[in-house]
Image (cartoon, rainbow, N blue to C red; front, side):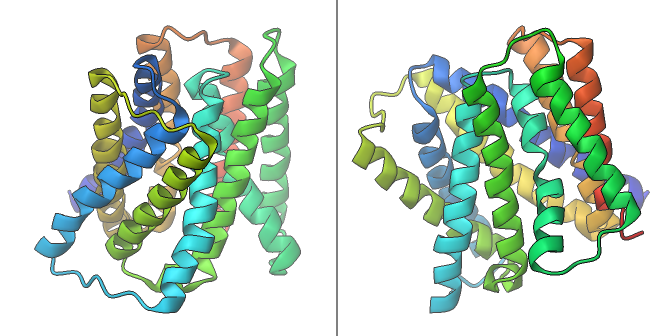
Length: 288
């Protein structure tokens, strides 16, 4: 029964993350844009995590090295990764953008092999081949002509998110308490995005009610709930199993995109998505 609970929490986390692009597009329809949505998302998330940390009596202490790593490696890579993914939603279906974004485990593998001298096993080579075929089917193998900018932003989002994962594993971020790291990561990302939006004149201040509700939904459902559920899932069934179940995220985005946003779904997109998700599962279970 305990293992079933772990599976439930991991699937809940994936579903909560999968709802995010739907809410993002709803926010866009209210007159806002990607950088404004994300800036307020991380601000509200930090505000929501604050009482949770007090309730759990988690220390807010952070040293200079941790603060530097959070802003440079975390806030920088993570904020850019999120922003480019949200920009991709403007050019293609949310399910397709999220699936392409899921190339990040493959990018992490490639970077680890090149820069950290990790061994490239046959299973990982097979996963890389499947992923390349899947990406080709998504971006060039179908009859539908996709916007080059959408493809570009989705791929860049996966690359920068992989930088964030690697930096988290090789910096002080990985040693911090998860709630504390997420709290300061949210503050760092929000600060970077607000400054960027103000400097570029991209910050939308007159936000409609539906956009505010959508942003609050992203902050609470796709940040706080998703994080807590994933952590509980990891504690019960382990990181690898929880990571495999996280591949439900793009599936949820695809299904909700079709149902709520009336997005088109072709057999080529389905096949390409399946190949990429299979490659992610292989990479995740590669050590076993």
